[in-house]
Amino acid sequence: MKKITIAIDGFSSTGKSTIAKQLAKELSYVYVDSGAMYRAVTLYAMQHNFISSSFFDIEGLVTSLDLIVLTFKYNSAVGFAEVYLNGMNVEKEIRTLEVSNLVSKVAEISEVRKSLVQQQQNMGLNKGVVMDGRDIGTVVFPNAELKLFMNASATTRAQRRYDELIERGDKVTFDEILKNVEYRDFIDSTREDSPLVMAEDAIAIDNSNLTLEAQFEKIYALVLQKLKTV
Ligand code: CDP
Ligand code: CDP
Image (cartoon, rainbow, N blue to C red; front, side, top):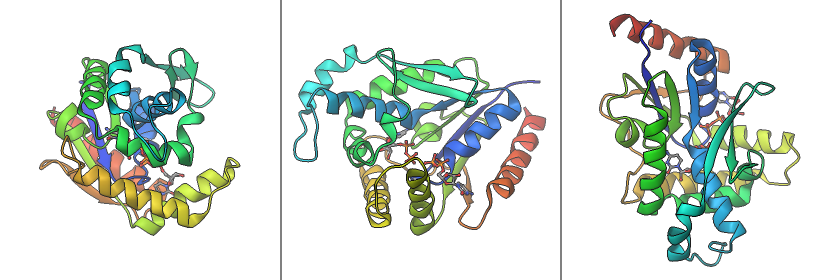
């Protein structure tokens, strides 16, 4: 069967990576979490004192971009490819609230975007890829055969993310998470370079009232429909 490219964009914590992983598994496609790449660059910037809550040495980070090597390695125990920063698995470290609070600032920098978009496009050269993020259908793969744009109410999204972080033992409050979700949505949608906007040919999905199963059923039907036409 012909392989397609599936681009999934949307607001933070809307379930993009969950559906992307499910689709990749079902279709035997490659899943790429583009947000993990922005998070890993942010972690690097934190580790090298280029960014904190009170300062941001943009030039320092930009001149170090060549030193940041990101790779994905499939982990069969979890069923998806995990991100490595200069050879170290950073899958857990990039999900902290601290990284979440700084990542949108890093993602505003055009040089960072240019470097990551190039790597993302290379990963999709052979199609058969499901990638989620903010600019996948608009910038990374404008010719993707299927584009989805996910949304859900901010409180639903914050609750889902809060539950996730509490379950893994992080000490956070619901209000902190809600604030972070709203803050990132604002910066991501208003930045100059590649803002989060719905591609004209994307299909909007609001999953505020959809279970994971219902969401999968609905989206998988869209994929099968699309596969019949390519
Ligand atoms: O999973 P969650 O919705 O919390 O976010 P993510 O996909 O891990 O992305 C983290 C941040 O990276 C976003 O809030 C954006 O600032 C940035 N990002 C981006 O600018 N472009 C992408 N293609 C993916 C993420
Ligand atoms: O990738 P993104 O940040 O958009 O979201 P995610 O990490 O896939 O999903 C955030 C959380 O919402 C996860 O714990 C999902 O299981 C949950 N979720 C849900 O409960 N119901 C949905 N319809 C979608 C996601």
